[in-house]
Amino acid sequence: MKYSIDLKVPSSQAWLDAVMADFDSFLQDHADCERKASAMATSLIAKYPDRQRIIPPMIETAIEELEHFQQVFALMQRRGVNLQTEMKEDPYIKQLMPLTHGGTPESRFMSRLLLGSVVECRGCERFKLVSEAQQDNELKRFYKALWTSEAKHGNIFVELALAYFDEKAVYTRLHEMMEFEGAIIENLPIRAALH
Ligand SMILES: [Fe+2]
Ligand SMILES: [Fe+2]
View (cartoon, rainbow, N blue to C red):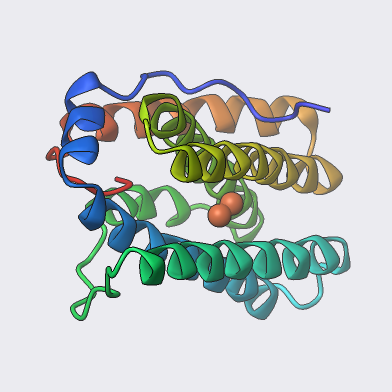
């Protein structure tokens, strides 16, 4: 069942060209993103231990993201690519964070869940583009499997928000957040990275 909404702004060809031109750098950044996505799911549990409904799916999501990290890392090892030694700040995530500030504790909880969906939906769109552009069969298959998994995650966060909040409030906020995300994506410096 689809709960997530469509992105407002598609990723540019310039972004895809930059990724395809330096795929090793993209893999290094991608590995970091998966590890951070796993940490994000467990941090939601740490922040909201009383929200029983989110705990099992967030544990499951954290495990799946960690498995993605394991898979990207294995792929990198086969290709002789090392992990990045310096963790650069993700400009995309940094610019999205204000979406979870301000308001009431309840609205922050909703925004935190919905931000999870927004980020997953962008990841899903970009992995699909990478999968379609890849000539290497192993990478093509890998990114295809990943985009279907991230699409599932994009739905889980909205489904959880709907378990706690009114449908109209959830979708009004989700549309606002997607607009905000679209403006960030349009102005993000182009690099061989997931964002
Ligand atoms: Fe993932
Ligand atoms: Fe994901």
